[in-house]
Length: 304
Ligand code: 13P
Ligand code: SF4
Image 1 (tube, helix red, strand yellow):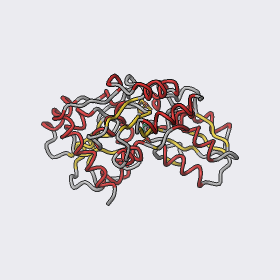
Image 2 (cartoon, rainbow, N blue to C red):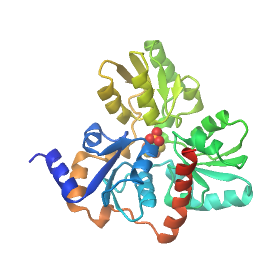
Image 3 (cartoon, rainbow, N blue to C red):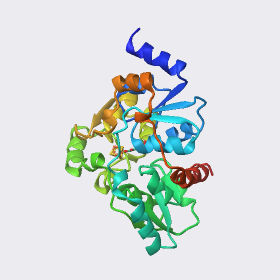
Image 4 (cartoon, rainbow, N blue to C red):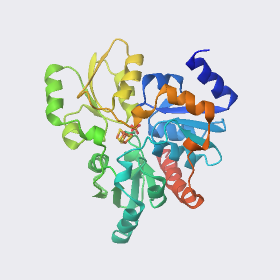
C-alpha cells in the first residue's frame, strides 16, 4: 500500500476529516477532505461529522476549529506551525485597549490566539472583514492585529472610526512596490491579484484584492490569460489545477510562509498513524467558553 492509500485507510478507520488551508503544499491539499480559506475552513469545522479533525495549517486555524467544535478532537499536522502575526498582539494588550477605548468594538482578525479572541468582541477573516465590521453597531473599531487588513477595511467603511494596531504578516510584508512594478512591466496584460495582508503600496497597484479563496475564484472567472499573484505561493496549486491554460506569476520567489511549509505529507501520515496528545489542541475551559463567542458572532454577522 502506498502512502496515499495508507492515509486514506487511516482516515476511514480512525474517523478523521482533514481540513487544509490553501497555503500548504499541493500534495497535502490533494489528500484533504476540505481545502479552503480561513473562513471556509472555520465554517467546515463547525459542521463536520467525523469525531477527529486533522488540521493542515497553522495553530490559530486548529484552535478556531476546536472552539467551534469543542466536543471533537482536533490535531495539528505540525504543532509548532504558528503565525507570527498572531503573536503580535497579547490578551494583556487587548485589556489595555479596552480600558483606553471603552466604546470601541475590538475586532479581531482570526489570525490570533484563543487568549486574544477571548478578550475580543468579534472575529473576522480576510473574506468577511468588510461585512462583519460593517454590521457592527459600534462606530469606533479597534482592529487587531493586522494593520494592513485594518486599513483596507477602514477605507471601505468611512462611516466607522478605526484605531489601528501595528501587526503584519512577515511573508506578505516582503512583497514590495518595486518588485511588483518590475513584474507589471514584464507582464503588462496580467491583472494583479493581492491578499489584503499586503501593504497599502501593493494594494494600490492591484486590480483585485481578496482572500485566498476570492483570488482563486477571481482568476477562474476572469478571461485574462496571465496573472500576477501577491500572496503565499500555496495558492498556485489550485490556481494551476483549475486553470491549466492560464499562467500565474509570483511577485517575488520568497512569498512563502515558513510555518505553512512545515505541513508535509510525511507528517500527515505520522500524525494519523499515532493520533496522540502531542499534536492535539487543548485549551483551558475558561478560555474556550469566551473565545468561541467572537467566532460565533462572526459566523452570525457574516450570514446577514
Ligand atoms: P485567508 O483568510 O485568505 O485564507 O488567509 C489566511 C492567512 O493566513 C493569510 O496569510
Ligand atoms: Fe500568518 Fe502570514 Fe503565514 Fe498567513 S502567511 S499564516 S498571516 S505568517
